[in-house]
Amino acid sequence: MKVPKEFTKKYVESNSPKEVHLFRDFLRSGEPYKSLFKNNPWLIPPDYKKPLQFGTGMYWDTTVARKHDYWKDIGLPQATKDIKQMREDIKEWGYCLIEEAMSKRQYKNFEERVLNQGEGEKLAGVEQPTPSGQYVNTLINKGDLFSKCIEQDPKVVQAGPVIEQLVDETLGKGWICHSFLSNGADPGGYPQGMHMDQGPLLPWITEEAPVLFNTMFIPQDIDDKNGGTLIIPGSHKSFIKAGSGGEVGKLPPTVNVEAKAGTIMMFDGRLLHGTGVNKTKKRRIVATMSNVKSWTRTQENWILSVAPDVLEKASPKLLHRLGLQALTYGSTIEGFGLGASGRVGDPWGSIKQFRTAYDNGEYIRVRELDKNSSEKDLKKVYTVRQAMKKAKEAKQEK
Ligand SMILES: [Fe+2]
Image 1 (cartoon, rainbow, N blue to C red):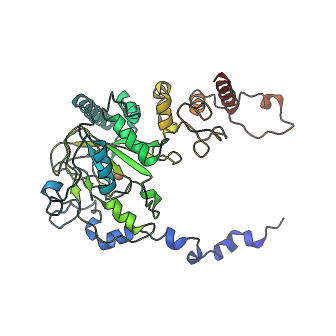
Image 2: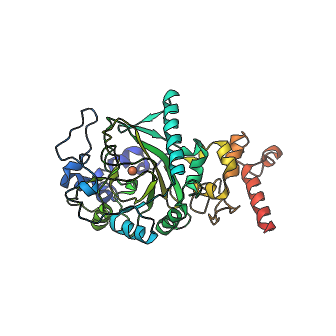
């Protein structure tokens, strides 16, 4: 049978010059980074093949706010325990600092576990180096305390209820964890390029509120010497002003975040930031846990990566945070989860059972069937059938 010529690859290609591509002007505008770098060339990342330059006014060559000529008299966020102040800081500056968010015992445990894990991963040859230092990824599998951090359990992060409240307000209840990893700034490392964490959504700027909200755990003192995170306070607003696809003008200078061990910085997914330069001889670590709206594809593919024993112990809340609670528009498996509320513990959407079946080599998917299918095929222990049965039973029990 002859395929109509309009459907041939050749025809499609010859009728699809770039200039007619749908929405191209907007989608390929390269904004806001294009204008950001054009109007602020000092924000261009360094050449990682060359030694890092200082004294030329580049973004990594800065200091903490209280010593910075431009910023020192401007009331930037200070570490606080007052949730009302945190809300003001987040709105105005795109971040807040939670004072003593982790107790001394909590941040010491955190620091020790991450540093030891980093060493172990190097020895095992599974470390993940970056131009700045070392990532320790998928912390959830690397110590019980990290699962509890994702749950914002006060046992490991005493400010948990405050964090949870602010993320609920920002992303709406039902948000999930995007990833949780440690970022290292090693002596002699390069700065990270300045970026916004919800960058994958560009050129859309979500003007009214972010769609990603970050919780950065700071288990060591950080400052301008050891690579305190670089930020441009209030930069989220420059993007809001520019709007989706719009151009960004000149931006104020970067500062290094200065914070005591135990602080947690919460920041807007639109805030420009990046790992700073560590000029000391000691490794500096922080750990970032970003959170996203419930339907988003997560950075870390938890569905596959979470260790079976961690999964077995996981509370309904943790399962939910890892995206293992399906809802109509996210994470359904063979349709299981369509129509589910997505609420913590809802049996209609509990997809952990699929992962367990998979781990045990017992996940049976529904394949081609018809009215002449064999008895054997029709009677297979399909995992989706089991899941639906279980959900129905749970509903009846209620
Ligand atoms: Fe980031």
